[in-house]
Length: 162
Figure 1 (cartoon, rainbow, N blue to C red):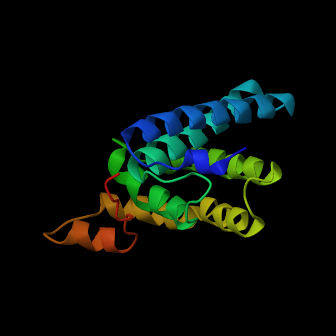
Figure 2 (figure 1 turned 180 degrees about the vertical axis):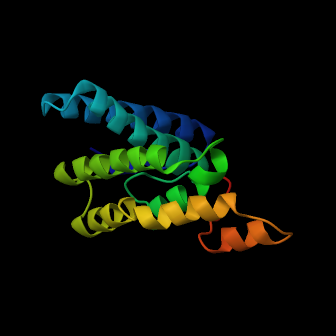
């Protein structure tokens, strides 16, 4: 696989990358089914990975899913998911993060991701206590600068226009 074809340069390449991601995620889902993973569980794992990759990495950050800084997982789960979801909750977030972890393990097994990045992503997907605290403190925001203080503890990446 040519990993560079997942790099976004402009709107046309973003659309093409989104399509490539969709194809890759379907491959991932098929591989889970071939491993005899329960179809419902396989679908949930693929859905979690899809949400992270296509909505956040590609759609929001406009980055190559193979070349992300692993801290993107923390930014996604500790900030972006919380502010973009009507009722952010740990159960849903944990399911998404499980999908992300299994998807990046799949990429590692295929030889498309190095071990160091895989391990860092795995670490960030399992930091559930941190994400619980982020959701709880989000609901407790008050005061004029409460939101900006909350944001500073897990800031989103600076996104540049493509």
